[in-house]
Image 1 (cartoon, one colour):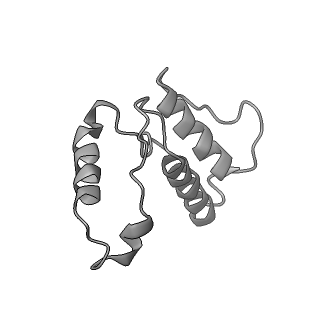
Image 2: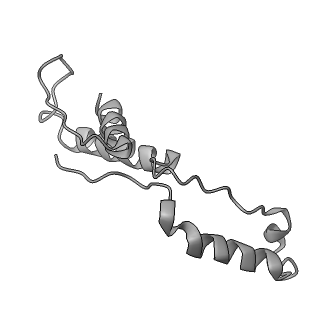
Length: 103
């Protein structure tokens, strides 16, 4: 199975999201959207690590693969499976989340 990393934090690309969040807060839209009254601007980390949602994406993908192809993935045994990831943290987080979901 070949997979790219899951959802991650924005890093340098978060400026448009920050501007959007500021715009939402500047306009008083709570009359039209009551749930916005309690909304707070999120704090976006700049570390490009996987988000909890990204980890869950890989976990759920692995669960689906295992349920659809049960004979393809026999029970875990050390050395049976080879897992590779780059040295980038988000890729190893993705691989670990996938393997956790698979077994």
